Image (cartoon, rainbow over all chains, first blue to last red; front, side):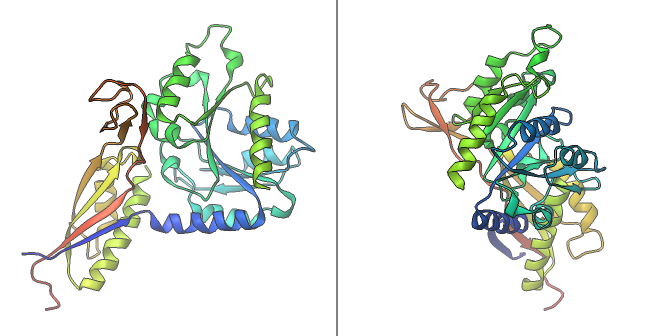
Length: 221
Length: 118
């Protein structure tokens, strides 16, 4: 008869240790940190560039960009004059807390109020890896369909904010997307979730998101 | 796809325990909540691939999925949460809280009966 040992240990504890270190560093420096997660192409980078530009003088934002390949997104962020560090995961479908730890060391934290990590475009894997953030923001664009909270419940249940993007596409009738259904499904998974409906392209509805950001970050600082 | 990272962490944990026990591990039991989104086949495939040539080669993984629980605000009882039928299984009330999703855990390792070291 073989010997059995009972453990009950967390399998992802190595990642969690890095996440705790990141969280400790951010807290010590009084910086708020958000982890932004969505499918590829939902408009995360456009949301960031618009937010940085519109909040200039009110909120200093630094960005950590996660992508499998290229510097494209960090270049878009730097064009707004905000600091950005690009992480290339070279195939991995999510950011790890260790990667964020080295990126944080490269950001000029003294000149930043809010760090936003734009995770690799993927609605599944990033939700399983804590990075040391204060909260997650899930972005869902209307072209992706209104069944996403039901199909990918983990990220909706774990996020502080749901930002429904590209609502400028709705009036044309080109996409079928029931906003009320998405709101009610998301709230069933997470009754505290803050929901904003916006278009980062036109700027419509972005004020609610900005007010939330300013209020939330100022509470920390 | 994140199963590859889970498999690597799992292999490291099992190898560390095997070194302590000085025995060859044959079965690992793990458990995870609904929202860990672990696909059994993918995890087993990834684990087999990275375990090749190590003490863990040929190990079996047994994976238990724990359904996330709702707690009814009316009758107070717990039930398996299902988004397509979001109501208490016992009394039908649609006011409830979701309890925390169980984490991904390495529950138990079983080792070979006759360790080579004995």
